[in-house]
Length: 215
Ligand SMILES: Cc1cc2nc3c(=O)[nH]c(=O)nc-3n(C[C@H](O)[C@H](O)[C@H](O)COP(=O)(O)O)c2cc1C
Ligand code: SF4
Ligand code: SF4
Image (tube, rainbow, N blue to C red; front, side, top):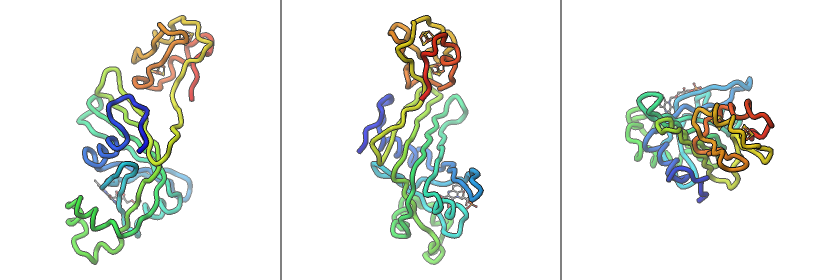
């Protein structure tokens, strides 16, 4: 199991379980033959420590898009309005597992029996596993906002966001324009609290010595 970059008390399996059990229906993006993005609603039906499982039918255009690129991204949203919501976004590699896991997914997701009521009607179904990827937890209900990166099926996280380098002169201009007040200027160089940062870029724009870098 890969441990997350720890900023909430959740780790990778908790985020994956949250997607399956607390959100379930997600919006998945794939890319079509013209290289354009296409989205559709897909249920994340099961997970283990390092992967997610969903099913689809082989006749769908979605299936073709998955097979062609073997990659997807999704966002899953929980909350009644913007300021009470958590979003989990994931991008990762997928592989087709086939029919074998279908009966198990139907047992865990009983509503599927209403959509595909007979054994015969399930013949076209196939299971995919998202086996390697990056994810982000973004909680707008917290003040300041709270975000955390996690990864599964691989070791290396690609750093992203804004960082302050040693050119910082401690002037404090960045803190004045920071909407989340998440820059600690008592340090030299100043330090951005990554778990609260919106990635808005105000600090980079205003810094007089170019000490803020985007990764
Ligand atoms: C709430 C909800 C959940 C859905 N879950 C799935 C799913 O898990 N698998 C699936 O193949 N289709 C699911 N669908 C239907 C797909 O979203 C729909 O078939 C898809 O848009 C087809 O895309 P395509 O025409 O590009 O293949 C779901 C639809 C809704 C409304
Ligand atoms: S990117 Fe925006 S939110 Fe993040 S530290 Fe800079 S000003 Fe603050
Ligand atoms: S604006 Fe630039 S130089 Fe000033 S405290 Fe922020 S990072 Fe440092």
